[in-house]
Structure formats: C-alpha cells, structure tokens
Image 1 (cartoon, rainbow, N blue to C red):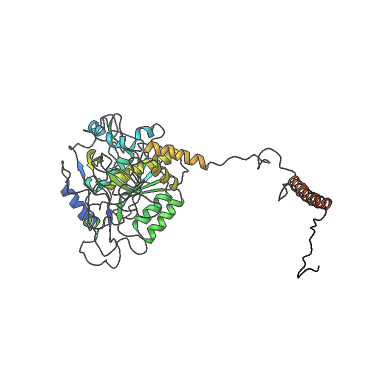
Image 2: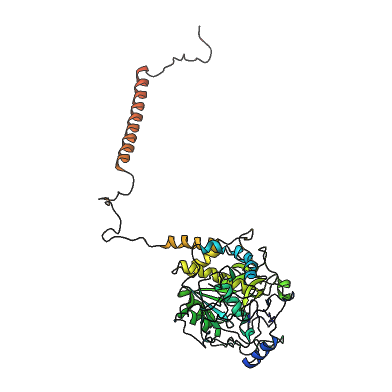
Length: 484
C-alpha cells in the first residue's frame, strides 16, 4: 500500500486506502493509467519503510486456455449483481508459483483456524461487497465469481494496466480465492462471491494548512455512502472496506445504519498510523472512518507471532485483529505477491464474517460481532486493548459461538389453545397475609399465656392471706422519774 499521512487541523481531508495500496489515485483517470503503465515491473520488492505494500513474486504469464477450450470472453463492463455468475472456466494449468503460495499462506490460515471452519461451511451463497479498486476477475482463483458493480468513484480495472486493480484483486483473493486444487491461493471463504464496487477517491495535496472549504466526499453525499447502500440493496451480506478517512460524515453514518438495519455486516480497516509521529507523541492514533462508526467491525493487524503490527493504528475503534504482515495475495495477471497493512487483515475478517452469514443467514450484525470478539485468541491480559482489540479472530470458534447465539434466540412453537402449556391453573389464588392456621395458633398461645399469668397472680394473693398480717408488741417508754 502507498500510505499517505494526512495531517490537517483536527480532521481528515481525504480518503486513503487503509491497507496495502498498490496504486495511488492521481488527479485524472488518464494520468492514473499512464502512471500505472509506467510503473509495471516484473519483479518488485517490499520496502521496509512502508507498511502498506503489495510485492509481486516471479512474473507469470496470463493463464492461457487449452486448445480445446473456447477463447475467454473479455470481462464485461458491468453486470447486475442479481445475475448469476458465469460458469467457472479455469485454465488448463495453475499459474507458476501456485504450489509455493499455498505453503506460504499456511500460517495465515492456521492462525485464523479456517480449516476447522471449512468443515462447517466455505461461504457458499454469500456475496461480499468489496469497496476497493477494480478486480481482475480473470485470475484463476477468482474467475467466474466476481460481480462487477457500478463505478463509485475510481478508474476501473484495465487489463492493459493491471496495477490499476492491484489492491482490489489482492483483497478479493484473501476473501474468496478458490485455489487450484492442491495449489493456488485460498481465501477464507473460497465459495463466496465478490461484488466489486470500485472506489478510490483522489487525495488532497498535503500542504499542512487548514482544511479545504469542501471535503472530497462532499457535504451532501459520499461515494462510500452510495457504495454501502448499493451493496445493501443488491444482495451483499458482508461489506469489506479497506479504506478510510480522518473524519466522520453524516451520509456515511446514515448509510451504515441503513445497512445494519438490513442485516449487513460491515468490516473496515482501522488504518496504518500506529507508527506515525502523532501516535508516538500521544500514545494513540487518529480515528479512521468508516471503522470508527458504531456497528462497524474495526480490524487491526498482527504479525505471524500474533503481535500487533507496528504500523497498525491503535485507538478504541479496534475491535479484533487478523494477519496483516507479509500476507500472500494474488495480483492482476495471475501473479502472486505479499501484502502488508490493515487492509489485508480487514479482508480476512470479512471472509470469516462471510462464513458465519453462510451458515446463519439471519444472524444479526451485532451477533456476528459478538461471536468474533468473544472467541478471539491471543487476547490481551485485561481482555481488551486498543492495539489488537479483543484478540485475533478464530473462524471455527466464531462459527460455533454464532450457532449458540442463534439457538438462544430461536422462537419456541406454541400449539393453538395451549399458550400457557399443559396443566391446570389454581382455582383460587392464595390469600394475602399470614395463613389462618397460624393466626389461630398465635391467638391460642397468647390467650394461654394470659390465663397462666392471671392464675399465678391469684395463687400468690391467696397464699399471703392465710398467714395474716405480721404484728409486733411494743412496750411504752416512760419518760421522767418514777414514783415510789
């Protein structure tokens, strides 16, 4: 990813891809295509200074069909999401390096515990909307399962300049890559489909001055808001957003609420500013939106040891984490590379959400979030921190938890005429106050006590009357002299 620092007076001024951004959004589509064409190279390396790159592996030619197979049609300009995808038409042989990439990605699948989850579901029947750059739908891992939605604000994928769809293709492969038998890259939900909604918004120049008068997303509407609403209205059950901006937007909040009300799970990258100067000075990162909106699952990145990636943004929008360092991906033309950034982690978590929605179509977004957070592994000692949230997502455990949550909400059928169940109601409710038997017992005891007291007094009086009063004889004392 080409990460740009957008430092403006207290708010974000533009969108930027939050994960590995292979292509910067230039001022015009023409200049973008020219830049992309000039930058295409057969081999590229991952820069250690960048936390959001997609590096290509050894170049491989575009898959060529066998002689007996009909020529592959060109990708359609657009296809309605409601239409069924074309039949899968894989090439005769897997692309070069397909066996190696399966081994390279093993640690990612093991950390997410996907193989256990695949015993339950692989995401069949679920559409994941990918709000990102265009997608090369002719790579072996994605062929026949990408639905092209309308352009939401970016150039589309152009086969002559494949870097234009580099980031979107990489994220789509992490979500729904189907591999090639024992080879090729596998996504977390290999039987899910992708609804591609291209969206890359041009960035403002970084001049360090005050905010421009009008944000690129506009004051009245936002391309991201339109993309979210489109996804919710065209069958998507999960929306993956590896992009973000420093600042909320009213139309986006409303679009998020609308999608949540329709049961759509929203997953977004928290950003790659964990190693920025601001984050180091303030021990926290700027909030990234849409990850910062309530109801959106904000995703951070960890390395192969489960430790927080140094570039992953740290703030309270981080809900869970997933691998985001040197993650193998598919890039346009059928080549393989590696990705680094919270974008990759977001796509992986979106794939886990797709597995849950495939098994439990009616589960609410809140329950999906609860299933992910309550079963996360490698969590902090205190249960939560703003680097990795509640921990690293466990696909199999989250699926099991989702089943228990859904079982708890299942309605109990009630036969007609037995709304209160079997049995008879008491004919008369218990009277309030003490029981009558106890009142009689207390009364008899009190009366007996009074009678005993009265008898005792009478006995004492009778005993004192028989002895009579006590008398004493006194001899008179004479005073004076006696007479003789």
